[in-house]
Image (cartoon, rainbow, N blue to C red):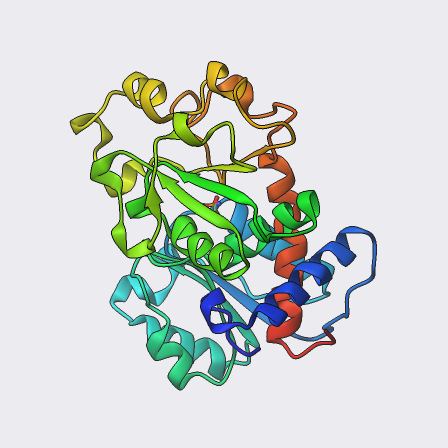
Length: 294
Ligand code: CP
């Protein structure tokens, strides 16, 4: 694997290998070390989890981060993304982690750069490192994907997490449905649309999505209270979940909108374990992109 821009470009064997590798790191296996290798993390959209867990993974692999801050870079003088990345390649950076608001921003980069591009999220396109950590979390829980019932719930149309997970979970044999307001539905994901209340009792995974206020104006459609009551995971709904079923959310969470605030650390919730698994998943991504042992 050179670039890591979408799980669609990886075989199921490669994906399963990365899940197992991530879980080995979690169990304490020592990762390969990349002394002298450098990484730049270019975040053109804000991030807490993705940026910091890539940075943590880089430290675990003994890589050195070359700090890059968009707001003090020559991007502010109009330098293009390609010229920015080519510059970092020219000065010796070995890999680039990039989050950018434009879906598919990476197409030109993967054609023309000689160093790996690791996609930290491209607009409403994909979020493959989040998807990999979600797969790690599901596999850790159920030891399989085959036949699992997964409901992806919420703001589907704006969600790169939903797009990545819908695609890969179907390839892995899960039964995936979507639950969303009609105005936030996206047919292109190829999911059957269901009501959350109709799938609660049979779903193994309730995967909630953040309402993306920055990509639309929710108040034009619902109040927060209306959304929570109609489409959110309420304290009452959690009581109707299947035995052994888990709650996931990529975070950040809008408390009391997608999920009741009191459920975020509920025994069924894997929201913080997802974040922990993100470090191990990103160690696997970096290892493979830089040609380390698999
Ligand atoms: N889940 C996720 O991508 O979070 P951040 O936006 O904080 O990176």
